[in-house]
Image (cartoon, rainbow, N blue to C red; front, side, top):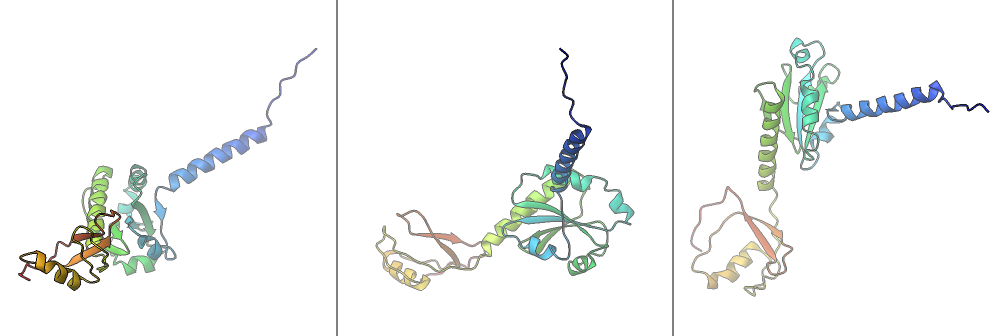
Length: 212
């Protein structure tokens, strides 16, 4: 009795190859996000996210000389949840480039919470770009924390057994217990710790301390 080996149809191989190629294409393309007039403003306003964006035009020789630099940076930065690598084609999306004052190519800018925070003018290599955006993202995040609107919310403070509903009220209640009260500009958030119902963060731009 003859045995017949089943040979997959060539179409099956072609379909499998197409699927694999498509997946690889999507994977490599997702590391650098193309921003357009429709998406730019919304994307750079994403909460707690730094965007490092390259602005270029297809005909610029300096942009062409970058080669795969930006794609390589995108791959290196993959996994940094709070940093996105983007690019804008100023040839097709001129309004975007005009809005953020792009007058030469290539231009590299960092945006955080919708605002431009830095422009890169250093060496064009992956390591330098990576170091730059990590540092700028950290500084922007720290500044955003300081610029958070003041929230004057008070709850019971068990340790001192004081009730206060305002900053002035807290100061008044503490005054008999302290020789001097330092007046600062506070940022206040409710703490989760039941033994300390108020967490106070003192801004870097505090007013000078004065006697109460």
